[in-house]
Image (tube, rainbow, N blue to C red; front, side, top):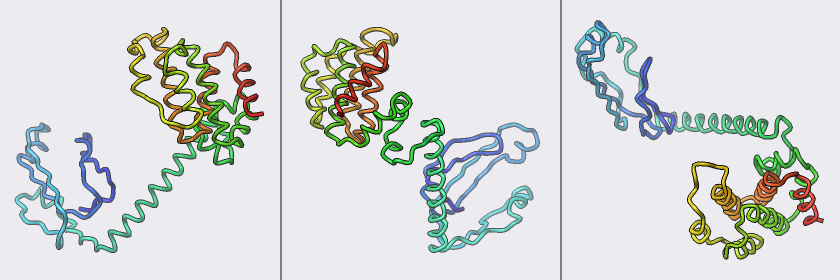
Length: 258
């Protein structure tokens, strides 16, 4: 038996037993069944089955065959094991196909995110869903953020996060000012201190406790800093969601980039 995929599933014609953890390679397999004929004749699940795998050495062979029914499944004869070079070629083909499939899936996700109008600029493509959402409101602002440096983008992010925190009545917290300063500088935040002052997240999402937890999430997401363009777009959009109208937020962000 040859395994080419890092995730291999075990299943039958109309059932599945889930995944099995086998790395790519060539394996010997032992399949043991008891009362197999009774299962077929009376259409009951009374049989017992055992399937075992171990790394292949040598050539496949049938060790024991005790029924005509088993012989039916052996009629093609054993297949020769792959050589090391053949297996390496199969794995290389698998990886190439997987890369092509992932690239296709990425393009499909981008097309959905940008509603079919995917930008050529890789900075925008990598900035995520919030960049696409902000683009639909103010493409010039997104382009300006893309052209800005990291420090300027962090300034916009901190400004927008401050609006989100203020809306959730969190600016009076002792960590609010230092956290925004750290955000501007790209410095780490004290996550434990921030989380420790928040009320438990309630089941009802439309109260102050929920708003405060969600606002803290906006701050903490921005602090990761892996993509400052994406962070800025996310913070601005989160501020837009909390504003009666988008324009005060959009114009404020534009002023910081002038």
